[in-house]
Image (cartoon, rainbow, N blue to C red; front, side, top):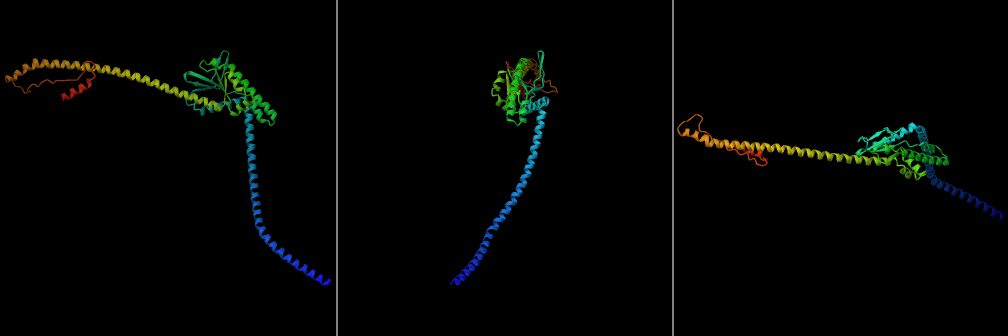
Length: 346
């Protein structure tokens, strides 16, 4: 019994093992059919990721190169602007560019680097804007920017804040200096303010952020802070004023020409009236002569015809009666009367 049980158990295990192997083979085939497409997809995805990574590395390298170049150019600009002469020249170039954008060069209503003699001192504004009626506005672009440039070069936030505060103090000091120059006293036709030009919006916003009362302080010293945007608006308004001035001058010239034309027409009418009167006098003299000839000469001359005295000239024609149609008071119809008389004579 025990041997039989062992034989059955062995046979059962053998059959179970064979069945399990067959099931395992079938499952491996099914699993392979499921996994192989996924494996192919993962391989393609990996290849695509590798290509993207290569492209990203190249783009990052190119971006890094461009950033380094930009840093070098910014460093060069910062170094160049650290020189007062270069910084002043850059401000003048920005100022000229603003004037060009506003279209004021065509009107020739500005004068760069003019020198003003004021007592023992000589002032040299960067721009004098000419207004209609011989008025002028002074523009200065020598605003100090050293503190702001130093703030841009540092990475320490505390140092940066201190430099921006110093930038605001420098601009406040420059506003006070411009106010004491009193350009309005040197230019009698200048308004009671001078424009302080900042060559960039960022300089203005940084200073105003550090010192919110900067605009009010400038107004108190008769100095107006202007960025390129606000100065262009000011110059556009001035250009509009010049256009209106040209229109007004054109209207005055038209009025002058109209008055001159009216005077010439009156003079011509007077001369033409004299011509009419002369024609009228000539007509009166002609009529008197014709009447005298009819009553005195032709009456006697025709008696020769009655006596049979004939000549090769034929009969004596009658004198023509002329009518020039001249008005006794104005003589304005002299031309038309003369034409009518010529027509009748023809």
